[in-house]
Length: 275
Image (tube, rainbow, N blue to C red; front, side, top):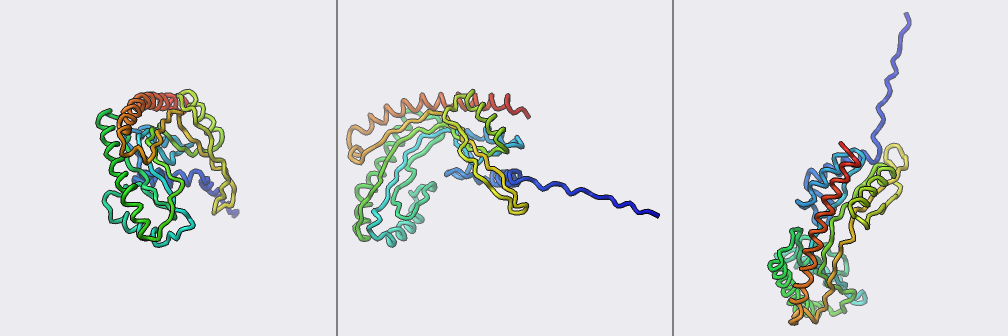
């Protein structure tokens, strides 16, 4: 009697992209996003969910658009900064005014994000909020920080900048192959996201099969940027509020155009990648 042996083919292992996509979606389900905010803001949620319904791509980080004030600065490396950084971390941990987005690097004494909103600016309220945030910042920067540096060994402040910014809708999308990335860029072109492009094509190696694959990441972004650099001299001057009035006016115009382009991206995406 002849025995018949059935050879059962092993199911192929999922690719590196498929495994990574599952990990990213699990992070999103747990409200963990790779953006600085650490979560998807409400106005970007529709776009993120739409993209992640497709098996050939996954979002890595997102922002629907925002107005923010950001300060960065470093302490001169010639000065000893060990004690300063230690006390700075303990102060930030106990200070209720320390912004949760601040991620201090060694030698950094920047305040980080001083103000941020993803909502459409209301002119008066936004100007008032930014103005108040800058006045609070000026007390720290012009009074408290120099005194703190003096008591902790001195040192010079370098590479300092303080900017009020409007930043447009942005999306980082990992794609399963260059063909998918190119199709996504077609959507970007049609929807006015003119600073989009492939920003990564690095090689990754599967830990199991030891097979190399490409990690294709696309940046989706428009050119709707606004930046108002501020000097320390103007923080307590009469010119600050008029400057903010003009800047917020322009932000409102850009914010409305940003919303139109974000909605257009959603429409063109659904045409190119139907479910």
